Length: 144
Image 1 (cartoon, rainbow, N blue to C red):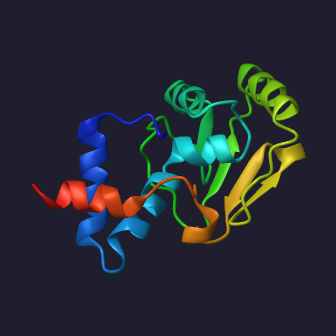
Image 2 (cartoon, rainbow, N blue to C red; image 1 turned 60 degrees about the horizontal axis):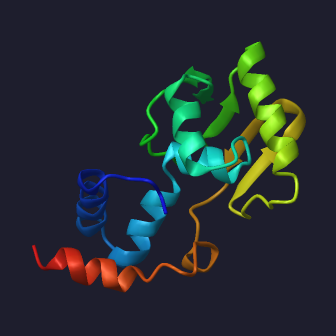
């Protein structure tokens, strides 16, 4: 679903396990607040895989700084923006038009005219992908 390799997936799980709170929910929040996931959720790309490449190719800035690391953890209050280059804006425009029927999650705000989005708050479990049973993931990785 998130297009991660096993090593990245396990590292994210270990990070969630070390954090106070419900491990499964924190794990999903960490996955959802990766820069590539947020770029996808904001509608700047059609797929998560394309979002990863979009970030890798330097089309995104966070708080005014170019970030080309898809696994970058975005925090509440961070401003994600498509960089002000012709190629970046053209790609984002095409994708936003194709994604116009897809809603932006409530925990994010998108300003279409500025090619910008803001993380308003952490996502709640109810707002995350319902088909994922995080308890099974926790049980699986707890064996190691």
